Image (cartoon, rainbow, N blue to C red):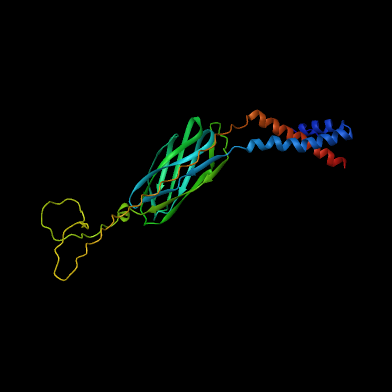
Length: 278
């Protein structure tokens, strides 16, 4: 509450204290304020949570399940997210609960977005699977859709309804070649018309060897056919293993934040008195 001069009491107490100091003491106090205040304020914004979704690839027509992750978080109480995508490349088939209690979700595969809302009464820390999303690949090979995350109204909060600072890492969904396209075509048989024999087993090419006997025609040299090497199949690439997420750093207690605010108000009063004396 301000006094009769319109000055808040906290500023008035700081100015009276400042008037009773000598010039050397005032100078030291100003310099101490300049050095100490940044050290008090910086730790309050040190911890940030990371909101992310993975880079995904799948064959046309297949469905994969991907977690929406909140990592490096302390006492997560709830949040609301909206994820947008290209509906000509990928659809959202369903949403299921992760480590949080799923409150609501809404899927729009015409406009290309999914809304997810979940909470935790006890609060979760560390790496949290907020929800699981099942994506279905509907596009053509090599097509890519962004998976862009928005925190609705910055609503990422702890159990005390305090906002949690965050950094978003978006993902992508890529249509990869199907297994049929990766299967090599077998070479044609080099053997002769050898008769009926076995029933419908798999295709086995007949490859003559240099030791097989062949009937020579008079005046014509017979050269054995070279062996045909078996086709080589390249195995699919292995997905990279994600790097571990650093352990969460605990936030500042509310009492410490109150002390910081009080110190800033007192020092602001001191600076006002200095400017008035000049």
